[in-house]
Amino acid sequence: MFLLGERLERENKTIKAMIEIYCKKNHKSNIGSCSECRQIYDYASYRITRCPHKDNKPACTTCEIHCFSLKMKEEIKKIMRFSGPRMLIHHPILSLFHYIDKLKEGSLKKSTS
Image: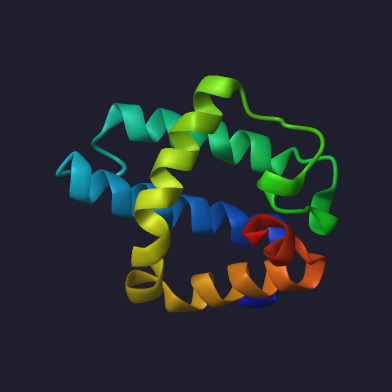
């Protein structure tokens, strides 16, 4: 069960869910049928699964490494701003775990300051 699994796997599921929400609402399609969103997901998934921090991975906003290109970072930020609030409705469990991960590392305080 992914909830008990690795953090990177959970992050991958979370970003996929966020991109799907964004794509369905903005491109009127599913992630499989929109090539732009599929490329963004493939890029994000590749970067997440190769994170050098592994399961001790911080939130990307607080990480010092910055794995994403500037263009993709802006795309992901746009998607997260749109999908973040909607995640509570569509994927409450993933939202809860994302929040818990941020609390554990203390980045919730840093990102709201």
